[in-house]
Length: 172
Image 1 (cartoon, one colour):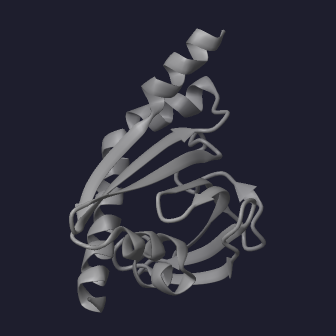
Image 2 (cartoon, rainbow, N blue to C red):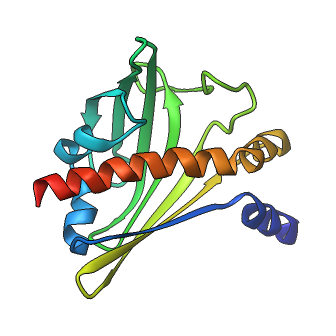
């Protein structure tokens, strides 16, 4: 049983690596500050509204995004581990306006929760960001949906990380 679950985790894990030309402390702050997140988090062209932000273990980042067409989506991070400025671990999910976890609006088989681990590795004057995400307690169908969507997830994340990079360039 332990072998199967470990294999399943590796099989469904998404890994994204990106290098930013900023000090680690600034990149970490961009991920852990309400003021920074409001400026870059989410799909390109979406309005971002932070409803609640409590950076502590078991704290919540609750947000609403609105597409250019007016569609609203709610999401949340529940922080698990905060090791400034090296590591950030949180569970992400879609939510309703009061922060209750709900199904994704685009798929009935999307995992309810994704465990995310962000590692910030400083090298000279740059910072390597490694993002690892995997379904948390996903069913076989949810894990398969996640696995099938990995390339789309990477494209979406890279668009969001492009916005982060532009934002960091603007504030430097």
